[in-house]
Image (tube, rainbow, N blue to C red; front, side):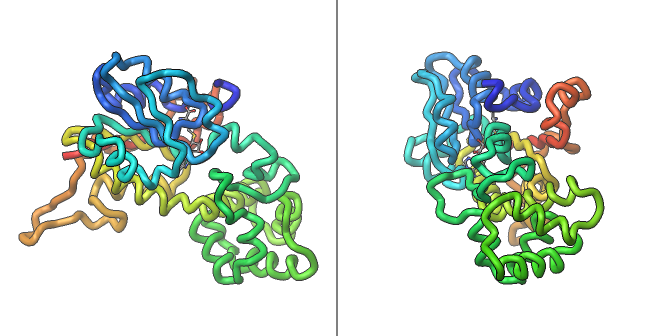
Amino acid sequence: MSEYHVPVLLSESLEHLAIKPDGIYVDVTFGGGGHSREIINRLDDKGHLFAFDQDEDAVKNLWEDQRMTLIVSNFRHLSRWMKYYGVSGKVDSILADLGVSSYQFDNPERGFSYRFDEPLDMRMNQKQSLTAADALNDYDVQQLQNMFSEYGEITNARTLAQQIIQARTSSPINTTGQLVSIAEQVLRGPKMQYLSKLFQALRIEINDEMGALKEMLRGAEEVLKPGGRLVVISYHSLEDRLAKRFFKSGNFEGEPDTDFFGKKTVGWKVITKNPLEANTEEQKLNPRSRSAKMRVAKKQ
Ligand SMILES: C[S@@+](CC[C@H](N)C(=O)[O-])C[C@H]1O[C@@H](n2cnc3c(N)ncnc32)[C@H](O)[C@@H]1O
């Protein structure tokens, strides 16, 4: 399991999930099952854990346990699945440990990293048709620019988009190596930082990560019971901002929802005013934990 993924902020997330042995829990990002395993360990025969992962490779981390159901689906369908299993409105706590697993990131075939020269894939769900290569070869200059500036916060997004359009006129861009050489001609600032932002932007776009997160957060509000908790661990500022706004204001724009009389109607009580981060020891042992931010809220 540790080879697939080392769970981040494990004890902190378990504490905030406030697990009761006979409760109903959801881990929307099963991955290597590190968090799920510890949740299950705290349940008795009446308790149940529903887990989600859209990557079929994660299924190999599943173990035999009647207290657990793994749903191979995008977590954006959380609310629909919980209705299907008859537990909507009855869920005690939900965990979302966002992004890609170390297995996905470190596996050259998946095309998530600029460290390898491999096909530009980046799909978390292998059944999806759109790949990173498709976007790079088919998007127009404006679509490319928007993706780079919005999801990668790349300052010279227009120049990079134009460079890509020009490069693909001679041959299609199919590998991470080709993309790195194109970016090298226009990059600004430290190379690794620039490439990380570029690869992050593509990954967020291909997997519609922001769209899926919004749908899941709204779904969580529906399926949790009053007093139920939602724990969100994010790894970049765009995700963290969405979770923060949603908890504080009940929407993604940041202005609190109000009723007819102007009274706030936000459905959440924020438990962590400031996000929790991994301690120095965890950061030393697991570099991936360095960017982690955990936010917790309780459904009113
Ligand atoms: C950071 S890993 C989770 C690691 C897990 N907590 C552990 O301890 O092993 C994120 C996982 O969530 C999955 N994932 C990301 N976005 C998803 C989505 N929208 N729907 C379903 N699964 C998703 C990824 O495929 C990946 O396996």
